[in-house]
Amino acid sequence: MDEPRTSPPLQRFFLEGRVGERRPRHFSLVDHLCLNADQAIRGIFGVSLTTGRPYPARHEAEPALSSDHQKQSADLMRVNHAGEVCAQALYHGQGLVSRDPQVREKLKLAAIEEGDHLSWCSKRLQELGNHTSYLSPLWYTGSFVIGFAAGIWGDRWSLGFLAETEQQVVNHLAGHLKTLPVQDQKSFKIVQQMQEDEARHRDDAMKLGAKELPLCIKKMMSLASKIMVKVASKL
Image (cartoon, rainbow, N blue to C red):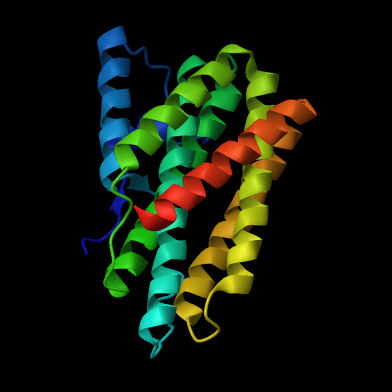
């Protein structure tokens, strides 16, 4: 597998959320369309921009797994990969319509960190001799639309949607940590690091003023997540 792709200078300038490290720069509508098209293509095909953080499982030996355990790990990692495709699309959609520059920059930086997860899950699936979800374009498109719609409500509601999404992901990954084959420490290390990152994204959203979503919205999000998990584990 190719090494994770870190941001080239222009992308890094546009995407990093560091205060005081840039001069004001204006992007045309065409610039924004090109950048978002680039993000979408990278997200769908698993070549997203990353921070370049090292692979969490790099120090773990490849375990001797039975065929059933190997399939179990692969199915879980495929679901996680599909979830990261969705997460990137959500952030891209929300960031496109965010009104607050600080929120917009946080969304862009979080999307790059989700790119780390996408790369790690893809690498682990290759190690397990398996494939990512065949429905990645569908996952990306649907999640982008949802993120875009959430962003239109306003930044506080958008952040609330982000915080609830990440909370559900944290809970979902906690379940994976319990159900992964005990011998598969490589997958365990990856999922553990992902869970820590998602919890931080949730906390960041709360600090920026996330509004708590109505219970009915939370339940709808949970139902949609369960459908995605069931389908992605097979396809």
